[in-house]
Amino acid sequence: KNQVEQSPQSLIILEGKNCTLQCNYTVSPFSNLRWYKQDTGRGPVSLTIMTFSENTKSNGRYTATLDADTKQSSLHITASQLSDSASYICVVSGGATNKLIFGTGTLLAVQP
Amino acid sequence: GAVVSQHPSRVICKSGTSVKIECRSLDFQATTMFWYRQFPKQSLMLMATSNEGSKATYEQGVEKDKFLINHASLTLSTLTVTSAHPEDSSFYICSARVSGLSSYNEQFFGPGTRLTVL
Image 1: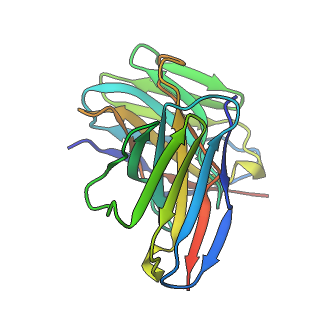
Image 2 (image 1 turned 135 degrees about the vertical axis):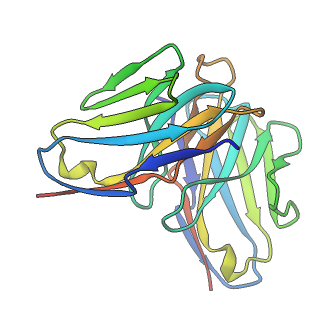
Image 3 (image 1 turned 120 degrees about the vertical axis):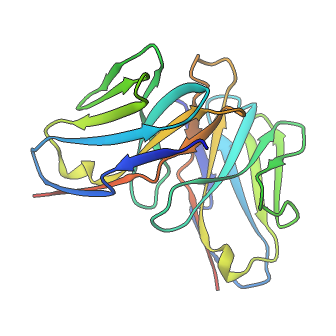
């Protein structure tokens, strides 16, 4: 079964600290993996997209890694800001129909 | 980057009425649009896929007669929730994709529409 699992489910960190979010997937065939940021009451905004040949991609303070062999990805946030408080969703494109398969997200709260 | 808008951003309606939600791609032509529903503290669930000029493809368990989708142009798709009931209250999000724009087949998401049925 094609699945995307994220951990932790929620996370609280202090402003200025770094954090790493995890994503494991069992989607096959694999097309690409995306990380989205979703603010409360808003639509998802793309942070990074990676194909199997890309093992790291950065977008400002966000750095995503991908290990296609172990089917794991991580999103590292550096020097967190209050505005980073949001849900971070790992999404894998693939499977027989090449649809987006969503993880349940990690809810990040950055506190002053 | 590509921008997708939705209108209205939030709507409150009485049970039994119909509600139309618009999804527009503002600076690109979308050959395919998707409609998602998101309940509190859950991830997005795909409801249907629509291609311009053809009938929408609905996911299993989604009633096509209740959630009418029209993709009449390359920049506009509409979702009509017919005879809305309180259990239809949810956050509806559309996305748009341009085939061939990139190797990623990226989808661009709208800001969402909060539907509350009283």
